Amino acid sequence: QVELVESGGGAVQTGGSLRLSCAASGDTDSTWYMAWFRQAPGKEREGVAIIAVRARDRNTYYGATVKGRFTISQDAAKNTLYYLQMNSLKPEDTAIYYCAAATEVVRSVYNAREYNYWGQGTQVTVTS
Image (tube, rainbow, N blue to C red; front, side):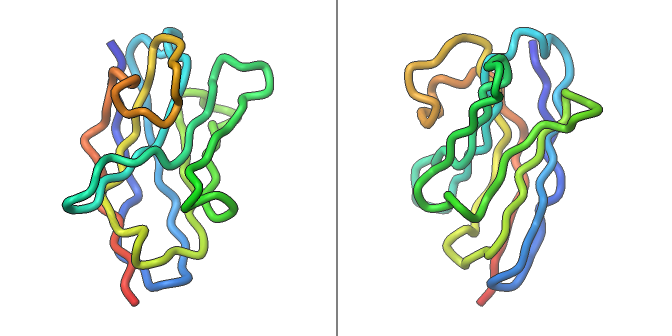
């Protein structure tokens, strides 16, 4: 069992930045991938950023709409804490952002169904 708690959401103007945090607890040693997904009203849940926590180089993956603007990272001192740094925010980034964990090898890192643990979500609103 892995518990995930997100924090750091809020409202920001276009072009601004936010950093989301995800605190993981429980059986975190079983985690293969940590990810950030988002879901806007009326849209499917979208994979935003993923980190392969067991890979030697901590491979990262980004959705096409956020690549170059968002960065996923793992806290160097506390390896159960993950961040999503979001820069150059746009109104279309408005969504509920979820932290997710997969405790098995996945076929597609962007597929929400591959992740078996989820946080409660945090709202990000970008105003124009």
